[in-house]
Image (cartoon, rainbow, N blue to C red; front, side):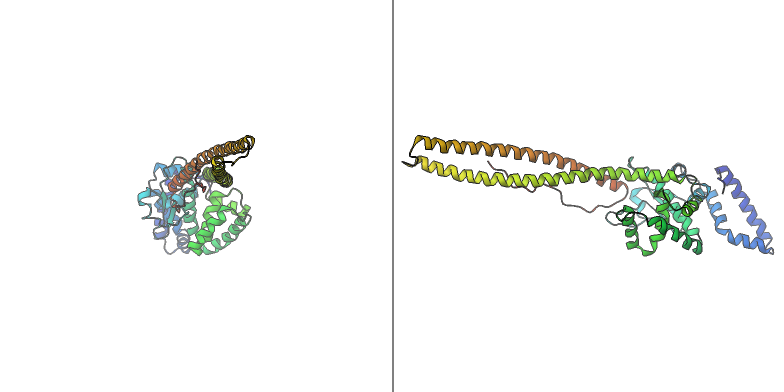
Length: 352
């Protein structure tokens, strides 16, 4: 279909209303009645969209997501509403650790509700979610036969993804919550997040998008924010684990050597204060020099251990900061994170 401007949509909406009235007067004309039945939903959508006054946010989402005239029609016909976090659960309810709900299309009232993302690093996801929910509205308007045909194409588009692709985990989560949600969710997710799709499926999505690459690019930008932070955090965690193992080894060596040194110093003092304990001055001096050398090595090892622990603690601060940042980002997209035990050095106390 050719693209419609807002003005064109207004004109065609008015024409549609006139046509309905005219056909109603011609009830005896069989083709007219059939046309009305077959196009009833489209006419209703045009009427609702015509009467709806979208916010500036919604207008921006339509543009940013690269929606076509049809995509915009289904968006506006769903009376989209951006909802602040404090009342979002009134409209879209699902609370599971690690799962963020940023929007929903409700079948009961055929409306789209969108979570108001306020973190400036994450607002690129808003038009993606809006387009995602628009596709749910579009899916609900497809015939059963068309849904079955598209379902095959969706599975073809999903199959090439690697076994460890995060989308497989996400789809599994949807299925755990509602087994019937697999295909509708694939329909919305593939259409807004995957750049490469089977040709026939791409042609189908062109009904709703003039430039689908726009919404896909936004989704990739969004996920890149998390991927970068998670990669940095995971690298820090690996470094911390390696350093922690090194500290454990050094600490064990230090404590064992220090304990042996203390015993040998006590034995030296006993011999030194015992008449004839050291038969000669040279033997006494040699024993004393050996203990002093061991003390120096122990102090050096202790200094190294302290330095290693200080470096570890600095990295731990960076790790904690990244975890905090990721938690803030997750809260920004309505994800509840399970609390984890704080990572800390598992080393014995260094004693004088």
